[in-house]
Image (cartoon, rainbow, N blue to C red):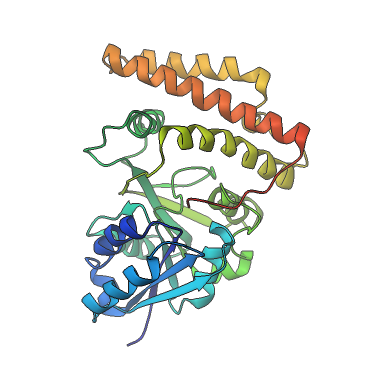
Length: 313
């Protein structure tokens, strides 16, 4: 069988949720017609190997490969998948996500519509039955910030979400041309890649209204830690590409946090679409997100950048 498409799923100690991801992948017609699935195990210590083996035996017609590597972080895992991939178009999703049945079909139609695209992606959202405070509020927070264009197709000019690695595809050619993901990054490696593709290599990434469900497995404490670490990795990103002098729009200094926070709250309040309960939750989350991110950047500036291996992709 000629392989035209490769779906890459990096994983680390999430054997149970990985099965849910794989179950959604096997519903993709394009995978069975001329595609493959590559699970890159980034040094898991659980029974991921056994779980993938059982899934292979239960789905003998699925071209599924399992690749193990010593723990090296999400960028290294994704690069390993790209190296192993035989497809001309590379799809990425995460081991705690569920993709819709028409995921690959709609993105492949996007390449037909935009033949000059280097990449095409969509959005990730919390599942409809999500009840946990941080996960549900973070999803509501992101949706409201971007509600004006989540239902549209557009050329991506920024390099944060959408088209994160939970829901994105690239041509293998562009991934090889730009050198793949920055393996020094344990977070924001997808944003850093998009920056190079869009602003350094001047290629096009398009966004479609295609949504992947993100079953975030983090506890509240781990989520708070993630918000802080996003700031630390933002500091690395800014140092790498802007030599410590980022454009005004990207500055996340600690003394700017109150202004950013009040701007967010004012935007949510002006929409007038929330219950009092939801507005309070969004206000709390906005404060946590803005101040923890700013604190992370601030810490990175004064303490240097401390590399941290991933415990969750």
